[in-house]
Length: 186
Image (tube, rainbow, N blue to C red; front, top):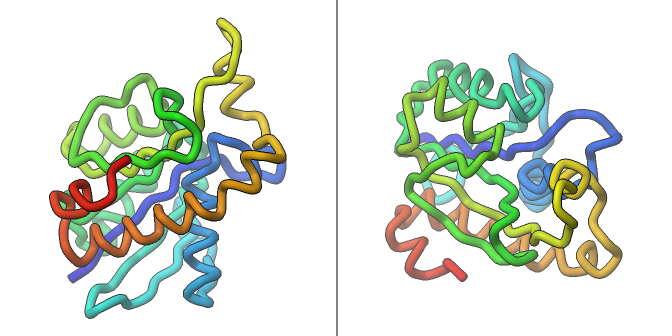
């Protein structure tokens, strides 16, 4: 069985350690734990490994956030992975920092990466792992906030939340989304 795990983010050193790149950062941590590396490929950095008989493919789209759907659609078709085996890791302003919630489907809630996936991959029926980044910004400051680096305190907390996110990825691929949500959602 094959799974596609998509970490959303923006390419480039100026975005590397920003809140909007939590999907990239989480997949980087998973790749480090598995001692695998990402290779640049069509529309994405790609890595793969096996876990409990499952082939797990990781992608970090190189299309920038607002065109993420292009990469997801390409890799779904290339690897012949159905939408029910796709999990997207995304930052979420509406969730407190470092809290995690998996959902089987849902709206984009204004997130440009999710909007793109929705438009190009057939709607809202795909799993997402929402990684809380908090909402500590003043009115009109949303864009600057998501593209800003983590605070020192947040950066120290990140590894624990990313490790839980990785456990949730493994669970999604082995016990399914319903049991994963029951077991892990904050």
